[in-house]
Length: 111
Length: 118
Image 1 (spheres, each protein chain N blue to C red):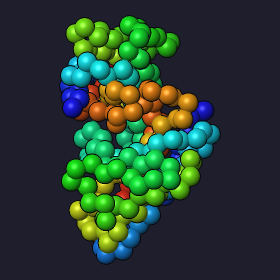
Image 2: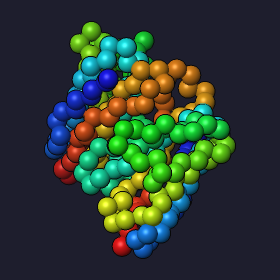
Image 3: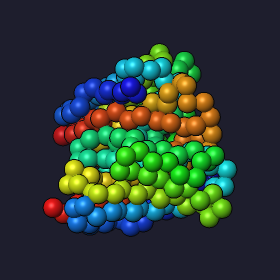
Image 4: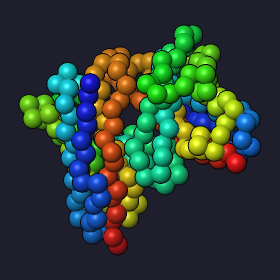
């Protein structure tokens, strides 16, 4: 089955700097790669996703890149703000199979 | 769009009682809903997958008789924790897959329910 590895587990950046979180997956047939942001005591919020037929997707300060050959995808947050502080999860799935999540990255943006 | 609600957000119950958690997709039809459990500072653990009108598919190690799932409509799924015990205390989160997502498993999560069993 699918296995998703996420790094780093914790990340601290200065406000205004960029943050990058990386994930690798094992199933070459996976075709959907979402990123979720989870604040303390709340459910995960979908912030961006990418499908296997696209290499990059951007939404304002957030971008995701996908390298199917290497089987890894990354989340890029530019001009970080204190409200970006949260736990971020990557996930992967193939067709209608359940999402497989990474273990999460705790991002702290220091003002 | 793509809003999922959960009720209640927080519940405290006595050991031995049953607790029902509702998950609703408010502005879309959900062909499939998922129930997760999350321990502190951990990732999401899938408990079961439910499709409207059919029996839920439980993950290995999840007791189907303890965690009853009903998916009565395209907008509502319920999780009932039967004969709850302190070890069932956890953060339970549901998610819903939008029917228009096709072959992509696009899921939207509810806000979660904090269950505390005394």
